[in-house]
Length: 22
Image (tube, rainbow, N blue to C red; front, side, top):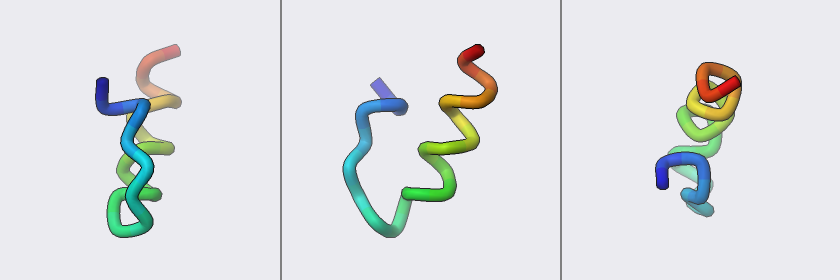
């Protein structure tokens, strides 16, 4: 869910979530 966020404002947050997802 969070990893599928396509917003520029949450770009950094999305990357952090993807890293923690692994």
